[in-house]
Amino acid sequence: MSEPVIQSVIARRIWDSRGRPTVEADVTLSDGAAGRGIAPAGASRGSREAVDKRDGGKRFGSFDVQDALQGIRTEIARALAGLDPFDQAAIDARLVALDGTPNKARLGGNALTAVSLGVLHAAAASRRLPLWFYCLGDKPAIIPLPEIQVFGGGAHAGRRTDVQDFMVIAPRAKTFAEALEVTSEVYHSAGRIMAERGLLQGVADEGGWWPAFSSNEEALETLMRAIERAGLVPGEDAAISLDVAASEFGKGGRYRLGLEQRELDRDALAEMLLQWCARYPILSIEDPFAEDDDKGFEQFTAAIGDRIQVIGDDYLVTNASRVAEAARRRSVNAALIKVNQAGTVSEAKAACDEGRRLGFGTIVSARSGETEDTSIVHLAIGWGAGQLKVGSFARSERMAKWNEALRIEEALGSKARFAGLDEMPMRRRTTKAVEAGVGGAVVGAVVDRAAALAERGYRGGRAR
Ligand code: PGA
Ligand code: ZN
Image 1: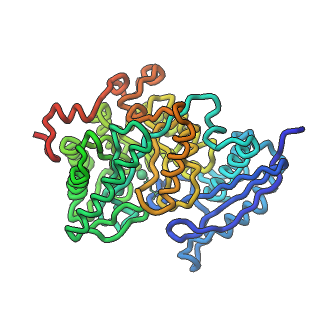
Image 2: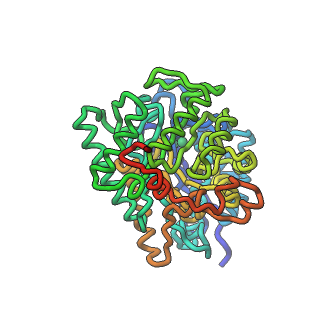
Image 3: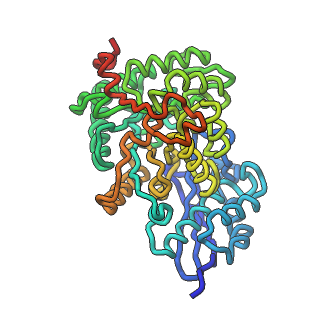
C-alpha cells in the first residue's frame, strides 16, 4: 500500500479559555487518519511573535477569526492537498512560503499553528502512535519538570501585581505525579491564607489566585507562608519560579511598577530581583527585563546565571536564531518554547533543539488563552525539553495538560526518567555548550539551590 497523503483540511471557529474565538483545523489523510490542531492565544506577547489574524471590528471584542479560517479553507487546504504528512519540515516550509510575510501576518500565526499541529497529529494517528511517541522516536523519554502558577498577575489579572507569574517548582519530587501533589498542597494553602487576609479576588486567566497584594514582594512572602502552612520546607520541597514578563511594564531600560507606584531603571530592577533571589528560594526567572533590554538580560545573567535559570520568552519568541544570538551574548540560559510564537511546529522545534544543543534549559509552554488541547505535553516529551509550563492548578484547560502528563508518565512506567532539576541549565552538562562558551560557569557546576540556601542560613524568607 502506498503511503498516505493529505486529503483535506477543514477549519472551524471554536472558543478559548477566555471565551474568545480561536482557530481549529482538522486534517484528514488518504488512509482515513485524522488530526486536529488548535491555536492558543497570548495576552502578554513579544513584538517579534508570529501575529494572530483577527477580524477587528465590533464582534467579539475584535477577536473573531473568520479571515484566518477563510485562508485555511481556500489557499492552505489547496496548497497542502496531496503532500506527505510525515515530512513536517516540508509542510511547514510550504505554510511559511505561502504566507510570505516575516511575521505570518497575511494568513495568520493562528491559522498556521492550527494547521501545522493538525498535520502532526494526523501523521501520528496514521502511524497509530501517541503524539509524544511519534515525535520522540527511539530517543529516551524524559518526563518534564512542571512549573506551576500559584498567583496570576500582570496582563492576566488586571495588573494586580507587576510580576505576571508566581510559580512553584518541586525540587525533591521523584515523579511528575509527586510534583503535582506538592503543587496542589501549596496552591490550596495559598488560597486559604489569602481568603483569611481578605486578599483573594478570584482566579486569574491561567487559574492562579487573583490577588489584592500591595506590593510584588507580598506575593513572595505569601508564597513562603503557603509552602510552610502546607507542611513543606521552602527551597527544599517547594521552590519559587517567576515570570516577570517585564516587556509589559518596561521600555528603553525604564520600568514602571504600577502596584508600587515607582519607576526603576535597569540597574534598580536588577538589584530588586537579585535581592529577591537572596531572600527567597527562587530557581528560575523568566523575562526579568523587557524584550528590548539586551543589556539588562546580559548583566543579570552574568550576575546570577550560574545559580538560577534565566528564561527568555518575549525576548526570544521561540526563534532559533534569537536563541543562538542569546547564547553568544550570554543574555539568558533558557528558552521558553511556544508553537504559536513561532507559527509552525518545525520552527518551534528548531528553537527547542537549538536551545538543547547550546546547553540551555528549554520549557515548552502554554499560552494564557488555552483550550482542551494537550499537544504541548506531548511536544515537551517528544522534543525532550525537560520542563513544562502550563499555568496554574485549576481550570480544565490547565488540568487537562497536567492530567495528560500523568497518563504518559504512567504509560512509560520504568522507562520514564523524570527530569527533576536535571534539565535546568545550572545542571546541564554538554560539551557543545562548553565549545560554544555558553554560560561559562554554569556548565558542569551542579548547583543545588536548596543546599546553597541552607549554607547561607536561609530562614523563613530572610537570608541572614
Ligand atoms: P501569554 O503569557 O500567553 O499571555 O502571552 C504567557 C507567558 O508570558 O509566559
Ligand atoms: Zn512569559
